[in-house]
Amino acid sequence: MPGEPTQATQVVKVGLFDTLRFDPTLVRVREGETVTFEIRNYGKTNHEFVLGDKTYQRQHEAAMVGMAGAGPPDEPNSVTVQPGFIKTIVWTFTSPGRVIFGCHEPGHFAGGMKGMVVVSPTR
Ligand SMILES: [Cu+2]
Image (cartoon, rainbow, N blue to C red; front, side, top):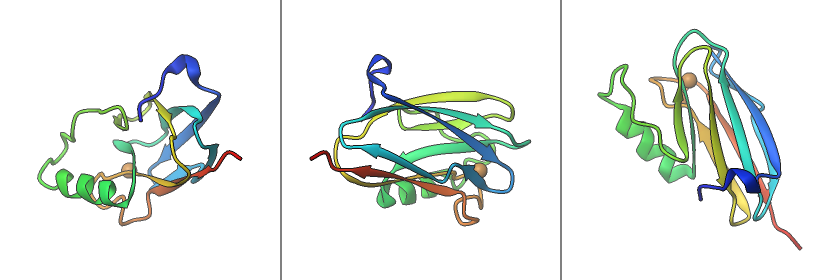
C-alpha cells in the first residue's frame, strides 16, 4: 500500500536503462517496512516502474496496448519516467512474499525489464 515518506526506513535507488534492465533487479525488505524508491531513467527513451503482483503486471501490460507514446497517468505504485528524470514511490510492504516491478513500454517487459522485491516475514 502507499507509504508515508516519514516512515521510510530504506531508500532504494533504482536505475532504468535502455538495455531493458533495472539496476538493481532484486530488492530485499522486511514485512511492514516502508521503502522510498528513487527511480532514475538513465536511458534516452521513456521507462516505467510498475510495482505489483503478476496479475497486476499483466493488466498493466494490456492497458498499455494502444496507448502509443502517451502511457497511463502515474499512480502511487506506478510511474512513467522520462529520460534523465527521477521519480519517487513510497511503498509499505504489508505482507511477506514477492512483488514484481516492471516496465511496460512496448516490448520492454517481454524483453526482460523486470525485477523483484522479496519481502521477508518478521519473526
Ligand atoms: Cu522500459
